[in-house]
Image (tube, rainbow, N blue to C red; front, side):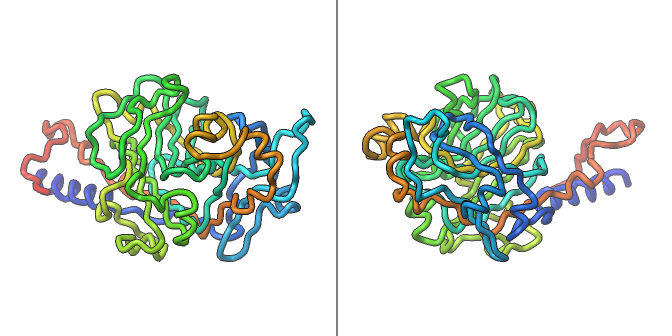
Length: 350
């Protein structure tokens, strides 16, 4: 009788872990209500002036209607590089009012910022004292060059195994921000040229999806191009129930291994979306000039060429957050001590 009950609970648990239910949805004005607008100096030392919500609306840097949300950079003002009061080109950085733990996060993006000097990103970051609590970069790249890179940044003691079941190409394996100038442990989506930059925009964008499941040792990222044949039906139509275990192999996956226990390095996170310019990555000469073929210095280019940033904007159709009902079920390990099985279910079968 006891084994029958355990088997039933185990099957319910497995089903729940594979199913995610819609929790939060950001469409239209939800982007104004659900996010704070960052106005401080850029932590990555970019040539950017982040503005608040009222100023962003006044300057048409934030546009919203029932179907879409746009956040963009100024593309009309030539900056005075000799004025120390000028932080850089006006742009927008937003951070979710709500913090999130494990779940499924789906960004439906129609357009991303492109151009020399641009550094767009969609990411999540600890509510604590970074890097303690971690950072997950879902979409990130610079100067319109290359493909998307998904990356983790942590405190010391989190190194990925090189053998992981994803379609992307491993970059550095050590996630520690103190290693190699905070490169993090990244995965390049080299097999998906439409995952970043002008190629992304040319085909109508697509969906970036993060599955965060650190309590069970996994962080996974997918990119689905707008017209790809393998876009899950639930993603394409914004359904309220998603089953990621039925999806294709992730483009990037990060797993527990002897070098890293995920739950020790990732806590509650805010959602962050931003567009900066130059800074520690996009502005480095090896990146700006040699890799991307952009002219001169990055800061001077950003100051002197406002018209070059007409494509420097995000346009989102929606952002949806899903959670698993798994935690609401009885854990199969919670048995009566008198049973003596310590959570074992020896007669269960998958």
